[in-house]
Image (cartoon, rainbow, N blue to C red; front, side, top):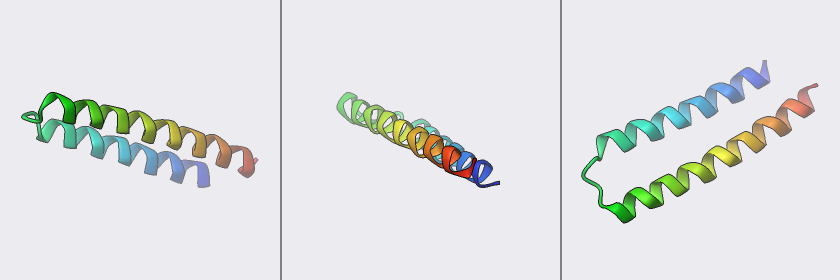
Length: 58
């Protein structure tokens, strides 16, 4: 059950970030690069936390 919750939270974060990217298409190149880099960091962190929590739940 906890794993489903974490997966849902992670999915929500990614959907929110994607929606934000779509809502500001006029952002300049450097802003988009920073946002993409931040997205990678958030995604990697979320994956690490999910894997860690999945291991603990078992």
